[in-house]
Image (cartoon, rainbow, N blue to C red):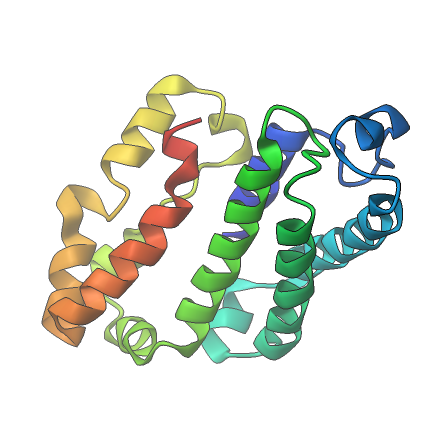
Length: 189
């Protein structure tokens, strides 16, 4: 999961997270007062990215280190929202970045805290074991692989829908679908 997120961020924003914000972009849509907020936001983004890198599937499954990761979500979401007018990365990508970060935080929270997610792990079905909606790093740029991944976004022939409804009910399926659909950015890139 984190690999998809890292790849998506690099594909969208290049090395912008590690580099300093170019001063020319700061002046275009930001006020001089936004300069400090931009620096602070970049620090939050870097801390958040470190949290993403450190998070493992086992952490999510066992609900380990999730609280620490969730604590990184609020400040980065708040700063990105407050600086949305700046368009630091150009081409309206601040909104996209804000949505990606918010969605990933929501997804991790869902997987870690949802009783249904725990039921799915315990049920350990073939569909759930085989389900991997994330492309490998080398496959992200392959149009055919992206199309295939999007087609099977909820498992082979949509098997995750059937299992979620069976184990957790239709309402829980709707919650899961909505969280996942927000994350489905790779299908529209």
